[in-house]
Image (cartoon, rainbow, N blue to C red):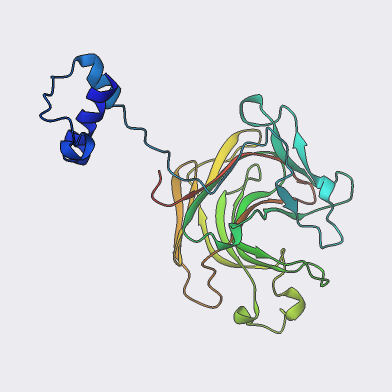
Length: 279
């Protein structure tokens, strides 16, 4: 049996002359293989799944994430693993404005894993549920450095949605300010690369209603300077960035905003970063 399988492989797959295998045996007669023989040779093809840059359902905790804390209102404890508050009753990654320190308005947590600073064209999505607050969003094509100047050092974009009860539901695309975007004496260098001082690039009203207590999905697709933003699979912004700083690579994060009568308590789940073309 072993000799017959070797002969079949040599003839049908590699096209190796039989004399190279049995140089002194003389003529060789091949018997037709049985169905059992073919099953040993022809195995089902195994196709590898498409690559994924990063995925986190927060079931194993939130240690992969780094809260941005270089500002007086911010504390790492405001971002936390939240048992049973995720999608379908799983774990969530939650933000609460006054947990452990009072009181965050803008808040950002970042994924700074190996290679993430070099991600270029990708789709980034995450679920969120707002129990209180004003805005939730995604940070993308981002970069971070640990510096002494308060509020710094960050680049990248925010895609945010507003969900105040009884008000309109705008979706907004923002760009974090750099010296290339300096346009006013009211924005001195201390506000460049600042996590809470972005420039508004685009604002639109959504057809989707974002009610408190309901789960929604935010997603962005970035390809070169083109940015497409989605809410529950609805394309709400399609923008090409061509002026000032244009960020073409970088990592991702989660954004929360609240204040006044609408201080934030927001659950996030199922963060996913995929290269474009894998869906």
